[in-house]
Image (tube, rainbow, N blue to C red; front, side):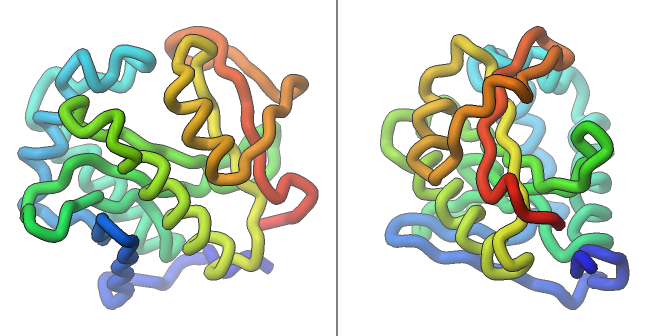
Length: 186
């Protein structure tokens, strides 16, 4: 039975620390940064359907992310540099049904000003290690648009393998699938 069945609540405070990053559950004061990052078309160029247009959308998204944490004990982390209070992005995993199967879907979105420094790879590796420990090697899925070579490199560096038979049409077009621990159950 998956340990994702409700009841984690607010008392679950998970902080992950890497060599250069701190990842923690987003807080209400992060909503303005969420809006700034996720409304920037440079940041969402591979997934324009994810772009926010209004701050109220960021508030709703924050509530949704917060509910994921409360329900499942895992969700999207705010990614921070140790000397910076404001997040440089968000990375994590959420529970989804993929072809009727419960899996963790990987997510990573960094402010474009922090690309090409290895932060995405570092954050994703921390999320994967945390999920593997928390859920004992859960099946994980990363959906990547074919032109997004940087994201493909990040998920491969975290141990994901291409799964050509699982690619599918997403909101913004076709998405390649990459999987990790795929023979396991959540």
